[in-house]
Length: 244
Ligand code: FPP
Image (cartoon, rainbow, N blue to C red):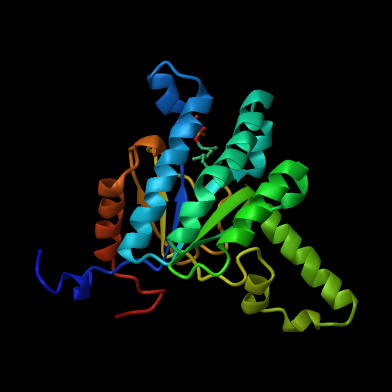
């Protein structure tokens, strides 16, 4: 190892904010003759390694789609298993996340979760608050359309109460009314398992994001796959509608 390794900078363009649609847990389990819940457990392990791999690369924000508003429609046993996994995940991972300087933030409508789940979420947010190395954002009971509906209602209320004028509503004000108000937009959105959809995830925030689709099923996602996504991102020419 070179003596100044600690001072060497990664010459690639590392995205400040990566968002991931972690897809393929069910298929991963099925391929192995396992229950879907085991796929989600393996998905949790993939999330754990991805958090530290991303933090080591210098990523500042990692947002993951962990439970969509549509996921309530899955069989009750699977929904219960995912809720249990959230609680277990908080218990298992909070101390290490704190130690590693990773703060956790939840986006989505928490009102539908049980008290137990909400307490777990408050615990992980509270105990990891102030971690400055990276922020892990868990999208839970999240969907982009419901987020935009909630923001619209909030702006309508503010207009009605005379706080703001309808004609003053601009992009900045809408961004500031979303769950992601204090976050930068994602630079890179990764979806695993060979699916090419956004599935109601960060639609407003994804306006200028680059996309990377991996054929790997989420539980198999590892540092090599993350590196491939970053290599691909690094080679992109982001013009934001301008000319170079
Ligand atoms: C999509 O795979 C994955 C989910 C709906 C859940 C994601 C959850 C985790 C990765 C677990 C860890 C995270 C937390 C915080 C609970 P799928 O079930 O749709 O897979 P399939 O398309 O192959 O059926």
